[in-house]
Length: 224
Image 1: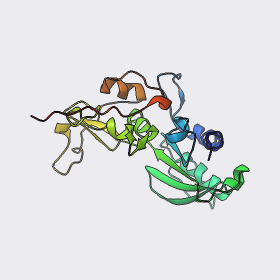
Image 2: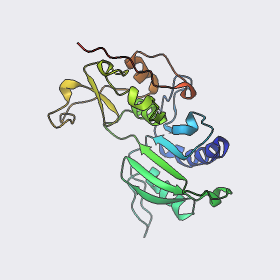
Image 3: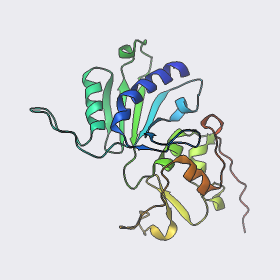
Image 4: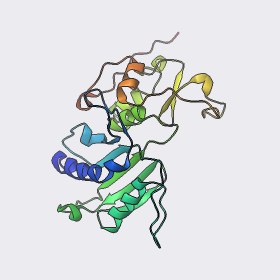
């Protein structure tokens, strides 16, 4: 799918969901107090070819008022997704609280179907995930030959951008002494607060990089 069509679908999905999300800072070039429901992936990078859509959101964690005889929803975000599925825009494939994958019914957007199913992935930022970290990772690129997402979560001693002594787990940055023997954050520990991408970029020692210009910059690691 071309970028214009991908952006159109992603933009419409965001429009339907934005009022169900918290407000906050998003990126260095945008104002604060905008809905934390951002188009990520190849659409955000303005790629010529879009193979799927990714949205990173921080839903308001409050259950909507139940309707008599209707299903119960944990959040208004989930309720809107259920409505969009009932109206024929999307079809649930798999997922849980942090990630939900749907097939997009392109005909509902007045577009011809593609040979392969066109999908949308909804990444929901819930604790302990930090929005700035999750959005940077999901913006990518994450290609084998140019994996910006992997580079920013790899320690510098291994050629990446992450300062030594820190780890990225569950889309959040932790000190190594906060990680247990099972490679999980110790119960009760809190990650470093990174509500927007610039916080993460500052931690990595990077200036702001527009999504279209993000590329892995692996360092040569010397042994000994």
